[in-house]
Length: 638
Image (cartoon, rainbow, N blue to C red):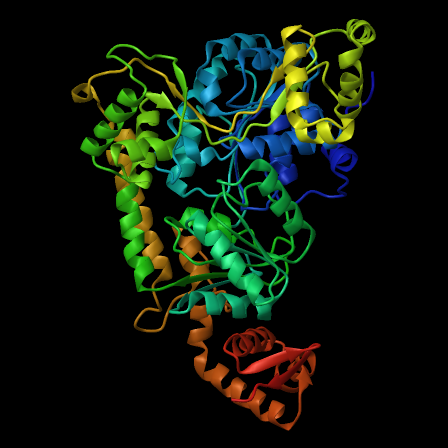
């Protein structure tokens, strides 16, 4: 019998790393022992390895529950690139496609199966799950299971119900953002067994300087940050239109910049992300960007709008400096932003009457009589629906999310679903078809060369790429694939550009519509508390001059930091007298001649002052007092 490989050997073989990150090995050991485990690790801490390595160490399938379709697809693609067989079930799949995936889980040596929490309620999935050999259950973004969390999703409550089918399988819950109250609730909701383990990395990021500035010219300040900090950066804005506007502004000023938002096609988003990953550009994006992105050399993350919660801010800001080098998390705001913060909150919680009006309008739009519509599916065009009934798009969107939480309907995340192809024949049967049908033979031969795995699962394809290779137009390729589908040689699922709305229960009268406290009232109260915490975080220093951004952020997550960070804007403000003296000495020296930063440091700073001097020089460049040319600093003429 072959020797059981160690976690480190698995890590080396599939990931190429010689050592684990902090806490990874302890978490993996706990799961391998069969213990329910909660892992609280900051963004970039390597949470996915904590269940992927045990999946390769144990017999059976690791079931991964994740709320993000794009992240699931990305994880599956990465694992397959490492030679690990992984699959996912996502919205938009037909019953036939789902059947292929589930049968592969039963008979095809799949090691990881990614599903959304909504999938756990479906009868067909449960029937297959009961027959699978499940080694463990990993719950990603586990804070979503807690009604006290900032991103509560009721379908997560279904996770505990599936434990009965595999009572011996341990549960690993992972999150980067959980207060102590939320952490306790996660363990309770997932029905952790006696002897469970909890691991928590410090949320402190010593290399990350948190900065908050009240700024009238946010774009000008952003430009100075990008120029003086250098390297790759991320800029977060609230709406899609602003992503392009800010990226165009930076590009016009000579800064390499691009933009990203959920309204772009998959192809466009992938192209933008690939360009950004390869260089030192600035990505201007909505919060749709960043989850699962592993770029260690992000030097700065700038927020041009105030996030709605400390959890969201901590997660987004934490994408800077994963390589351990000095990096900056900067939040810029003005008086308008403070007013917008409350206005956005009010839009996110429309009145119960407004939610009822939206429900009635949706049912009327699709002409559903009372008592009908369960499991009916339609193309969903939110803009057209809002135009028809004169709704505000933002309020309409949030109203539909409350209806979704109550089980009235389902609105899958927008997918520009690629076309998918599957060959249900054996290789011998397909070969006979190609010989007999010369018209299709050349096309199928090319497709088989371009795409692997067609005989075992649905594979994403590009009709345009196929057409270019075979010298046909795209419409002809689509038509030939549909004809082969009719002949049952292939199963061809043509891409759909519109998301689908699914009515998950029969239409009811609006007067009978009820929103539970846990889905509305309690959620609204908790969201208001998080909003107030965000206001407290961005507030200026206390009257006596005390304060530290890092301390404020960590205190929210229940972690006490005795010492101030020394590098945030508040800490630098506390040391203003010393810094002013240091600045005078810098000006005196540079008035004599230009100098390199290391030369200034040698002349001016003790080892304790080096950090303060570096921050001072950066601020002086940011404010236009100094210029940096070929690593040499000089005074800028006034």
